[in-house]
Image 1: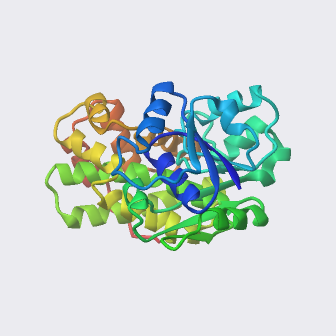
Image 2 (image 1 turned 120 degrees about the vertical axis):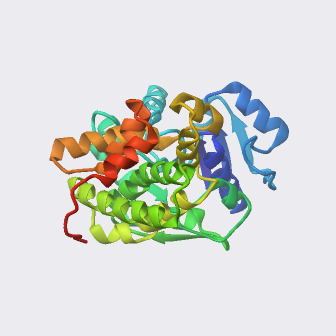
Image 3 (image 1 turned 90 degrees about the vertical axis):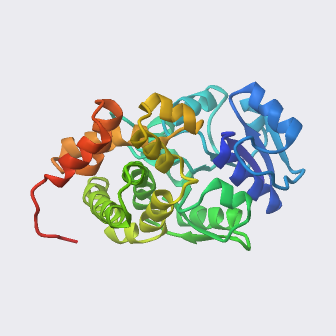
Amino acid sequence: MKVGYLGGGAWGFALATLLSANGHHVTLWTARPESAEYLKKHRKHPKLSACEVDEKLTFTSDLAEALNGADILVESVTANGLRSVLHKILDLGALDIPLVITSKGIEQDTGLLLPEMVLEVVGEEYKNKIGCLTGPSLAEEVVGKFPTSVVSSSYDKKLMLTIRDLFNSLYFRVYPNADMHGVCFGGAMKNIMAIACGISDGLGFGDNTKAALMTRGLHEIRKLSATKGCEPETLNGLSGMGDLCVTCLSTLSRNYMFGRRLAEGLSPEQAREKIGMVVEGIFTCVSARQLGKKHNIPVPITEAVYSIVYENMAPKDAVTALLQRAIKEEHL
């Protein structure tokens, strides 16, 4: 297939490399001309270990070039920037080929999952052309060809299986899951919990603390997922518990490392600059907090992360506030 790939960050580069190795012709678009020139010249990403890049992968900063003749689009732009990129695409003409979402997030203020937001921009008639790929997958390990398992989904079963076949390889296994909202919700929310776990480790707390944060974090995700009509069982799978584990436990996770930097005394802006890439949990904690307030669902870990990032609360004070919450019976 001919693939138009939107987004030249580490994750976009990793998946574009995988697709070209699978035999597809991929044109990767980045909005920054200097980034496109770097990728053309060096054929590696500055944030990733060098990997073999197939000649079928080309780079451009011209959006029209990426769209020209494409059979399918895959996006890895930021969740915060996807709406504006969609409008740029529509300015060039109608969007009539499938779009695979790989970004993870919930839009602020609207509370829309990314597939819902695409529908709002493009129109209800486009519904069966929207799909996603998500799950526990770190860019560094994908380019290193470490065994990885993820999930494909779509409102349309045929497209869900097409996405599976597009990405599946000997080391990158893709499992179909028809619960589009569930897989997208789990992938978005785990970034908040990863920030919390990074803060916990940065403060010197142990594995007991992190286990509690991950478990209660999953409970928080499950409660809030009901607002989006998600299947609760989906959150026990790769896009829920699986993605939560890898993001909360790995030093390759930018959300986890952002939390550690906060605990070390850096301001949110300093920590973000230190990471050097987009930290999606910063934006998602705003959206999740808004959803919790709208539906009167307590989200204490999300509230704690929000207070640290946006209200200058000291990380230790946020932990103390969590520990002082009334203890209720555990419901799973």
